[in-house]
Image 1 (cartoon, rainbow, N blue to C red):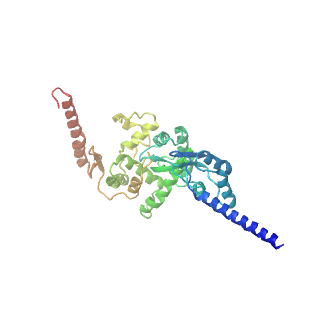
Image 2: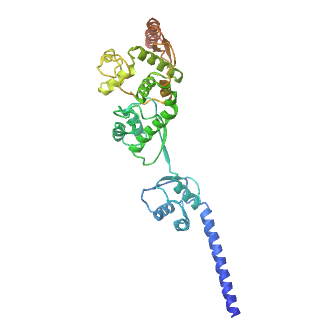
Image 3: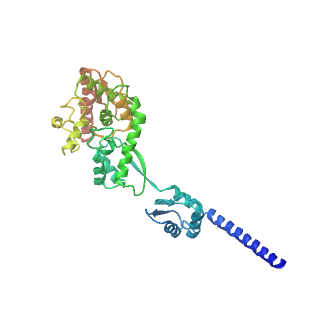
Length: 354
């Protein structure tokens, strides 16, 4: 009997030893990096794919050595579910690191940049060109004001509310999610960085601020001049003087299907509420999506005496408080400047010119 129990104990110890060795091997396998691919590999996990199918997909791609071991680990632990998406693997990872990557949803992100000053059609085209959806589908989403109506009940589209920035989207992000992200970013930046600049009791609506900011965005090239230009337009609004802003006329021409890239004297007579040569005050709404600096300038315009400004043709402007001073600036920086430039160009093209 003693011999029997001795054998039984030996077998038990042997089994425990084997189990311990097996567990140690299992843990080593889980923590040992593995790379069964040559350089870099991307794996697209479709939504709704089962756990075992995901693991075998990773094994086939050379990311996991043995899908069954990873599956056993998931069965033994209370691990979160593996998330769908596109994943990039560029180095050897252990099965535990692979699982952690898919638990966290560490998917490949693609960058999309929306620059300042684009109207809806231009924004849709820029995003589509970068591979973030179909232009017409994007445009249809942008023409739906629903995401902004609580802030701007008068909005008929999302014009002005697609915040310019660089965004990072997972592969497969649809047009609705892209547009929602642009609007959500506008709302966040406006509340945190623009609204606090408004004087208490100013009574200015989001729509009024964004509309002024959109004009400033189109007129200004230098950040240092944005608040001054906003100040000029604010002075004109206070005095009931028309804004005479060419970008609003261009927007009117676009709405009418008449914009060909050049603004002519006759265009200034187009009968549109966006024509600030004909109609004093702000136009009915934004003419583009302004950047943060223009929004901040519109919320807190500079306290300046100016009513006029004209381009120096280098991105900067010269400002004037009186019409007489403005006319002198126009003569110097527009008429004389261009006469001289055209004369130099003709001289350069003529026989004997340098």
